Picture 1 (cartoon, rainbow, N blue to C red):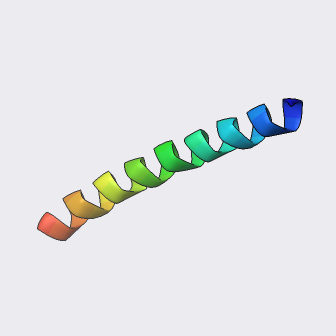
Picture 2 (picture 1 turned 135 degrees about the vertical axis):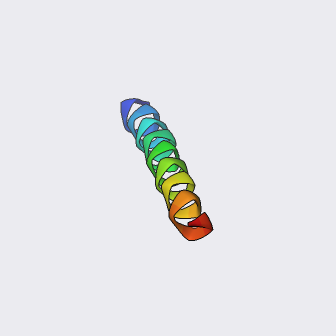
Length: 31
């Protein structure tokens, strides 16, 4: 059970990081 929660937490964290990097990439691309 704990492993599943940890996996979900890491997945959400990874998604947040990727979305932030994607936003920064879009800003750089517009310029």
